[in-house]
Length: 461
Image (cartoon, rainbow, N blue to C red; front, side):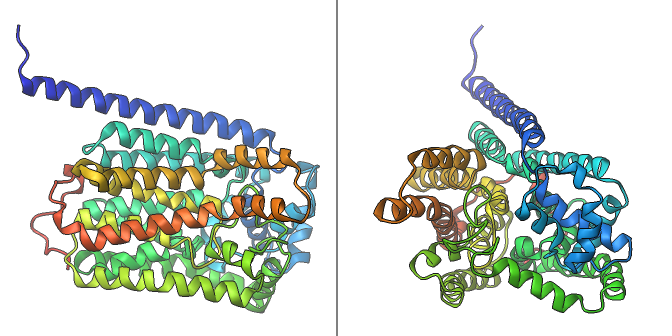
């Protein structure tokens, strides 16, 4: 019996989709198993979760969650849980730098003792990242399922720090991705509003520009952005009032905590003398590069703003002046996901927002030509050079070289460590911004049915 060409094509598509899904499942299994194993064996497991958990515990006990001595008293009751903690881990756990808005979401965890709270947070982190990854697969697989599966598998395998440190970025990024998918498909809008609102309460610097996109895009997207803003206020208000009651001087104390971490040699200092800005979970904003040339906060902050502000401005003008379609939305989000990491303090795990680049990448790849190949190259490089396992291997090799404390060799190795993440983020952001401005009108290929706009709604501007 002969097989028609269309039958052959359908068979190839089905096989490619199956293989891509298998890659995604394999990446998910490695992500979970390796992440849990590394988290259990880490000297300071879930260190970043403690930065939210112990201040929230202080709040539950009506103590000042921005006063180190008050949080330290709560933390010391659990010191048997962390026998190998050093000063840096204790500082992270007790010197609160999160805004009051974050603690509405944290209160259910703070009411539990450390073991169940830690396990529940880890399950939520892993589960939310997997859910976001499969949602992106659903949106992108119709273009190039094999490449899509491979990209997301690479993303997952290179995201083990989310499990080891249990930083809130894992949940924040996942909630943001869910919200984006809900808004662009115009389905489960209420779920999307709540998800984006929660992510904004915890890490507004992480997802704020994604929210800004929907505000600028107009039409129903602007409505969703305004509804999200209202939901953010409603969700945040209980924690803000409670914090103000138990800690009337919280703003001054919060600023002092931030200043301590950001001071020269501090944990969040991007400069070469930083106590925690390099190595795994390194600082990836442009400040890290600029501090190599002049380790002065005013210099590298101003330089970061001067580079990033024009990119954000161009992106915003394009968004306001063009009619929004789902294809253009993915290009805009791919660009801003990378650019948003550059102007202000972000670390390696924050770059997981780059998951939003996958739909734009495979759309361009499906169009064919050099632009699609370059999109794949840039996106792959972004996942590699901001990835966790990549840097675990590279830093291990660097440490074995034992360079002199000063001299050209030491400077070269430091540059090799500091430069790649911000530079690949800058390259990715500029590339997708250029495509957003020039190529988007030519993207006529339809998205999967889930992301088709509702026909009877007024089209977004």
